[in-house]
Length: 351
Image (cartoon, rainbow, N blue to C red):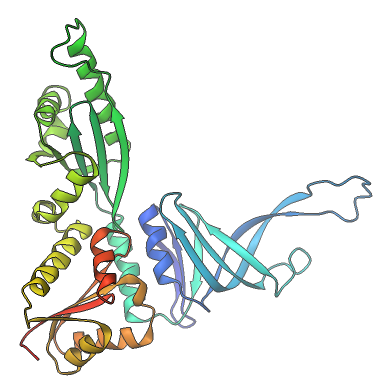
């Protein structure tokens, strides 16, 4: 994410999203009743052309501004949409007061005018810093099948499966080694499409991961230097979830947001399982703890952050010396926290 322009007097910031992560952040920064504007292209019918048959009109590009009523983000398609009432635009081309949907795309700037609170500004700055960092990728290998887990700010983007044309060990095949190398090359090509890579975590239950590591040593030593091996009980998505929960990624990279979030939620669930009085969850209970100054670390699912009463709890927690962690609703740990009421706290003392 890049900030292109800003006018603090009127609360206007123009940003350019550069990744799907940025679109996800924007889906939580923009709120209902915010005003957004961007260049848009619409097909305008020419009623004075004298044509007797229906035609598709002429495409024209212009700035259009809407007062937001609905926000939708689809991580699998990378689509962010803001729907609302048109408040500004060329009146000869668009009817003011009508509904319009703005599709926000990567590398296209958008102007946001709103009452910027601490949490939305923090989120914007987080997106800007995150865009500067290289990527962590989990490579889950099992026999001739590989799944990639691209670690995003919002969660895991799964790529695959990548299938290798490799015969069984008992089958005699003269070109088996060539096919194995081709399989490894195919995996590496897809990894490089999602670079630059900071860490490559190669996991799996068998020896295929070791073979791939050896392949990188010989054919891609720079990528090999960024790689580590980790044995897991399963491959595929299950293996990726296993390594997220075991704390390895968190220890390798402080920037792996999903790993630290998963670790915190797991610790919370462990304490709840032990009936510990050093954690609490649910909005009423957490609000009481925060008002008493007992909340040491507050966990909040991102979908709640727009609510004023939740922002109040977050502000009180920080003012009392506690910290606040916003958990993405897009991954498993966030969904587990949602089941507990979407808000929880680690306590300084029992209440």
